[in-house]
Image (cartoon, rainbow, N blue to C red; front, top):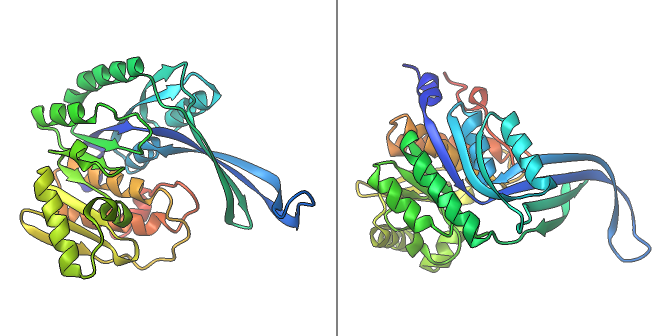
Length: 310
């Protein structure tokens, strides 16, 4: 069976905070007479899936069968998220909360530069989160791997219970973490903090040796099979019981790093769901990250881009 066929057979469940990324593109020709700010004449608008929905979109783009479990508002933005998920062939299990505003990140772009970002969000209610946990338990046995995408917006309040359930079913669980309390992620299969997120938890370091000591200490404290620290221009480093595996950055022009972490964890999840070894999966994730940072905004990597050697 080819890798493409193995990916097509993989069943990925993504859970986390869903967002709608809106982009307003325009021309900047003058400064406002009202304040020292540029005037943007909007000429084009785009909507893209963000947060956990972007993780699901990345997994689906690679060809995996992908389901997304999350909470959205009973509003226009929530309807847009549902429509976009359908267009990408993602099975959407979205609990609607009338008290919740679907998270929107509105970016104003002028001359290919982001000039402003405006966020709209409210935390989900306890009742709808309890319903989502019930859905997670029902969906879990039908999937090969779980990705928990934590953006710190309240959608993963029950993450400890989700990790415990995944462990009980022997389903690997990958977590993209947020905040400074990583005890929430104890017993996950793999954690994928970026460099600044890792520093927030482990503290700063001056040498590579010190960095590795801190990383291994965190992996052991949380009982993780793997800790993958993405390090921007320094590449990414994987820590497991078998040792340290480092991948240098794929040399490409960096245009926009937003959403790169989504691409990394989605690619990792898809490859691991095929039965691939962790260090090999990290290699593919590194390749995918190198491609996606060359694109504007939250974007995906397609098989024909990633598997150019096949």
